[in-house]
Amino acid sequence: MLAVITVTSLVDNLFVAGTPTTLMYRSDRVRERSPFFPAGTPHEDTEVFYEILLEHDLGFVHEVLTFTRRENESLTTSLMTIDPEHRLDKLVVTMKYGPACLDEEEFRTCRNRDEGAYYAFLGRRCLYRTDAAFWAHHQRGLRRAGVDFRRSRFVPALVRAALMELTHPAHLMQRLGRLVSGIVGSDRDSARSRAPARSRAGERGSGEIR
Picture 1 (tube, rainbow, N blue to C red):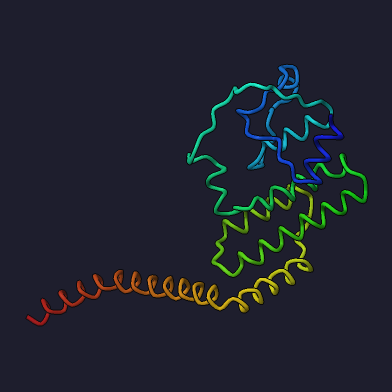
Picture 2: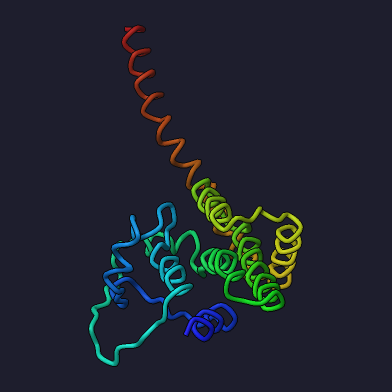
């Protein structure tokens, strides 16, 4: 089962991990892990799934046993603004578990595919506003996967994303409009914050003249 599930999952992007409420683990496997979920990762349920599959089999229960939450304020929901396409998560899984599950050629193919998709995503996002939290999250994720940020892949991806925008004027104008709107809005907020101070200074000045 290890060869079928893990290889198919990594090579064909078949996501079978699900959420913690869709999986049942043997009690002895739970007791032998402390803590059960690995610390320092936003997708600990996915990673523990792959770690256990390295040594154990996966079965399927043909009965509805779970309840799925919708539109809740879970950690996964908050991460949708930082990694909405799950590109970082997929790269982390490939880099951490690919060497143990795939042969050299399969791993190289999966790594090239997932790195390409990941840096293409970063290139597109750089054309938007990205804050410090965005980059901190991705730096932590890359360290967790044991890989360095590759400028040799990021720069070409950024250039391709910029060229793609130039070939779609409508997209470019929408983005420029959002940028200008954000700048104008911040200027207005700054003006409002300064206005009361000027008003108070004027009132003090009037009192002194009288």
